Length: 249
Ligand code: NDP
View 1 (tube, rainbow, N blue to C red):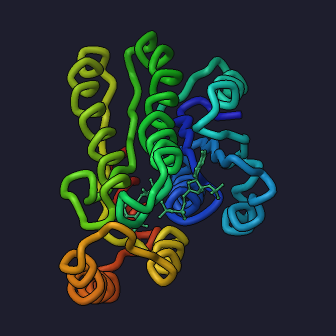
View 2: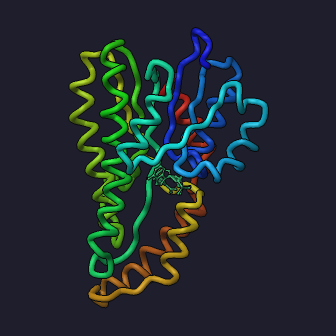
View 3: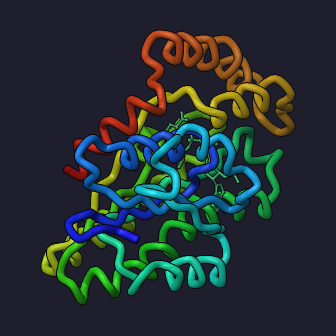
């Protein structure tokens, strides 16, 4: 349980990548300012997080199951938080999707929106009432540079991040009068399983319906330059965690 003076932070998608490092960074805060509720949809994946958290596990870091695509799971998770009191909510869970729209089913597209957009909205709807009552809180949403700019063959992922950006920009104004902050983080490339999966997807990608010029541009210009950007500028999940810590301090 949180000590008085500690801020309760709930984070989604902590089984890997950025979410895992945010959870560990905050749980290991030198001044012990945070009581971290790290959530993941499959607790069988907890070992990496538990190991990285070390002594903090069970003290400043606890675990709860949470699938942001499920109304029941979201409600159950928030009901398991003492008094439903969350000072800082970090919406990190997300999925990618790469390929020409012709090769992607509407069902796959909906899964991306269900996670990246409705998952975030579902969570914000659930944490907001207590924050409004207390007239205090901070919501941080992990968007992407692709929430600001479209990228070839990332149409659906980009659209899902644009959608959450629009939602948050509108909400931020309404939350301000309740003294609730809403921040968005828009990382460029970050070395995580997200990137590994994307590269694997590219390797086996097919291009039905896409025109030859777009395919050529993607393969010969966009991909090599993205790999160069990744190598030259790619950040680590720890870089993002440090940035987030500054945002919430
Ligand atoms: P990872 O794939 O490493 O992590 C994604 C996390 O989201 C995993 O823990 C995954 O859980 C979780 N997740 C997916 N679906 C759900 C769900 N329905 N309910 C709960 N959790 C879920 O990727 P990153 O760490 O890189 O991505 C984190 C965030 O950062 C995402 O929102 C992504 O869009 C954003 N981002 C990433 C960038 C990058 O280059 N890596 C750049 C810009 C933004 P599980 O293990 O169960 O699949």
